[in-house]
Image (cartoon, rainbow, N blue to C red; front, side, top):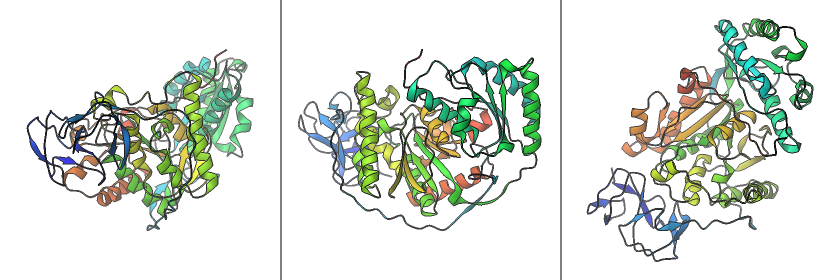
Length: 493
């Protein structure tokens, strides 16, 4: 195995695959390099002298400009590299016309639904419409735990602080989130719990639910009940009794919608875990399935790659708006668009937002962009979709769930234990993390550095997804971690 890797032939930097010491002469796959400084795993070293003001190339694209002269073999990081990003800009479409390669069909064992896609879980969900009834929802979960078993694969509440004191689009987004979760295929039964006086009450949410299966949803208005817990339990018992009739059946993998997300990334995420997810995405979309890429602020610096892969000019224009609108969101709060990566990202070797974005977008594979979604919009077009949502892990993962993802593939170089409303498969970028945090990590993509190929790992990840869709629990499910975070954008009254 080489000591370092250069990702693209034109790159000026190579990435350390293990901790390296000053004075070492190392192999980067195209020659030898003598290091002037210690280079931590995942960090970059200059392959040649780089002059102050020169754009530094990694992944074949600029990741920033040198703020000082950088000698060959020196460490490239925040002390000598700065972002080139700024606010909104004009873009031109230069289509690359990627082909979606057809792949062999596959199946999983899921729960067919009378309306919509099959579920990969059959859970009983309690959704509060407003934060005022969060504790009612939690109390109902405690009482309803006895209902779990057999085809009822768990009882979960998703508390949140919203549903009232909101205006305009912010309030509409809360309604869309709750409505889409109420009809999510992974929920065999849903109890929507309202207070009765909130802005986004049950009667306001119902129109957003569309043509739903009424046998799977019940409603509880707490102010109208003498004992809301007793009334809620009766409704939950009805739903559970209905769910006991559900059975897993063979379903085509083209019915899967899989969200793509990364968090706690390191310098190896864009080399191992994210490209592995990209291979998976191409495999699933080649079967006629659907993947969704989000984290718009983490597309900044790599957005033209996605724009040029848009299937048509209309999608290109939607992607331009997706990017520039999110930059405008930052600027409306007088915040810089490049205030990213996080401290953990930097410790792992990611220097600028361009560096992070070029690694992040590896999850999208190489197929065409076939859909661009607003926050809270469901994915209806098969293939790769882009979704408007921030980079925050739980907010973005919730957004993917709301857009119809039955499962999320979540790559990480630092590790994270969280779970969102749907099964969240954690994919480690490095083997030490996978070995150290076996209670968090589901899949080790670091094996790419030990001789496995991307094609092998992508196929193995596809098998993992199909097993998970058929009922194999993820680590977050085994740990009992399920959370919800709605994107808050407006004022609070």
